[in-house]
Image (cartoon, rainbow, N blue to C red):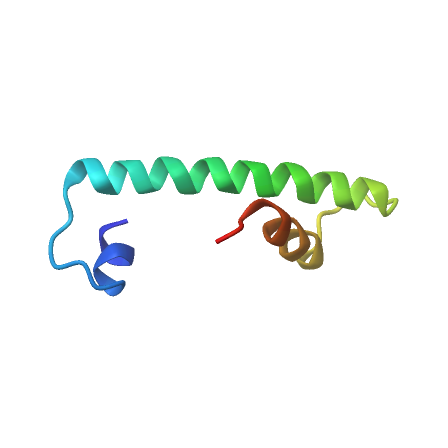
Length: 63
């Protein structure tokens, strides 16, 4: 988390900020994985494919 924030321009990163970013990213990843699984089931597959992840990420993360 520290590396990601520093690469984004942060000069210093608190432990609490790194932990919060980890939590937020984990929650988003769980939502993406859940929706990707639903897309693969809808397509009649048991395997989640990269396109399921890409589609799910577009639906879950709106920046």
